[in-house]
Image 1 (spheres, rainbow, N blue to C red):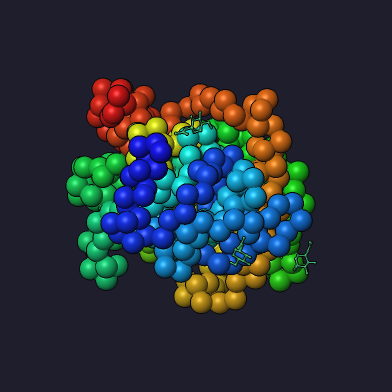
Image 2: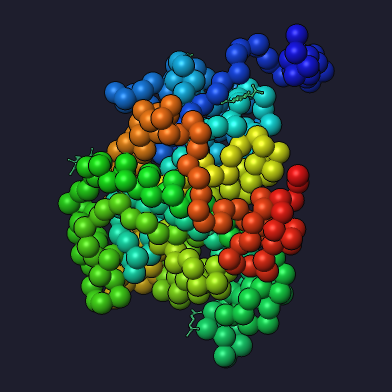
Length: 374
Ligand SMILES: *[C@@H]1O[C@H](CO)[C@@H](O)[C@H](O)[C@H]1NC(C)=O
Ligand SMILES: *[C@@H]1O[C@H](CO)[C@@H](O)[C@H](O)[C@H]1NC(C)=O
Ligand SMILES: *[C@@H]1O[C@H](CO)[C@@H](O)[C@H](O)[C@H]1NC(C)=O
Ligand SMILES: *[C@@H]1O[C@H](CO)[C@@H](O)[C@H](O)[C@H]1NC(C)=O
Ligand SMILES: *[C@@H]1O[C@H](CO)[C@@H](O)[C@H](O)[C@H]1NC(C)=O
């Protein structure tokens, strides 16, 4: 018996966790969804059967207790539960679970998202380079802001909107492998995306020069993603967080999608990467657009938030239509390309430079350009 199996056996005896000595699974691709609508797209499909193995992982959400894998373990899926705390907790539980060897696994975040009509439209599928945690800021209610403030949000340790943060928590920005992103984008473009008459009608209301992309037909788009537990709607918050994205990324990032998990997922993956449990250069952030983050001209912010969301179903469907192409691309070229990895030529990691290298945003590496852990 190996040392790790002995530890597993002791954990089973001590903590009563139900354990079987199934072989450790070494996935090529791990799909990460956030809730059932996204998850269900991947079951009962012709390409592969993710219900051939169900693996209960201690620490997963009570709503989504199992990881699901194909019989050979090459493709797996988990569901984090929604928002930042669920995402970070579930991904951490996966990394330290001992059921998986994830050192060579590609992670495909596959979720729906809000969309900025200045950058893209509903039913589109997007791939992000930067994930920005725009909610991690000071906030004053709009009715109490000083007259010169355009918004109630401003960075921690600053004295007004538009300034750099006075201090950083490290999770404000993550940058992922752009070469891998371009490959995923290429695979996804081969998909025929779904769209509906209702989504077309909703999109057509985004008139005017600012919303040309919001009114255009859906497609596969390269653009960044903003994370916040808070689900916002409106022109002013939209613009405030466009500004935050610019400030946090030193003008390199432009958010097109809004979601509640990705920086948390990335932070948990980054911590695992520090201990060589995962490879941070193997992460793809795919978000499809289900609803606009601000109203069309003449509509109120509340009506946009509470009204119909005809983009919801095509966005969910498109996660799978585009995502299957990405999964198949990686699995089919595994031996010739993906097993050894796709080298990043951009900086990858967090605000602090924890994985080594110099981030082009934030205060610069606080570890002198070296990894935080040798
Ligand atoms: C996995 O769970 C699903 C239900 O979530 C079930 O339909 C399927 O049969 C299970 N697979 C196995 C191998 O038990
Ligand atoms: C994990 O998988 C990689 C190859 O994918 C292999 O090189 C490594 O030895 C495995 N690690 C363990 C602990 O089994
Ligand atoms: C969240 O992650 C994105 C994507 O990596 C990154 O661009 C963004 O800066 C991150 N934001 C925060 C606040 O961590
Ligand atoms: C999109 O999906 C819906 C629901 O499955 C279907 O009715 C519609 O025909 C599809 N549209 C296209 C363009 O594929
Ligand atoms: C965004 O930044 C621009 C340029 O600094 C500023 O004019 C505008 O008022 C800001 N908008 C919000 C809502 O903060």
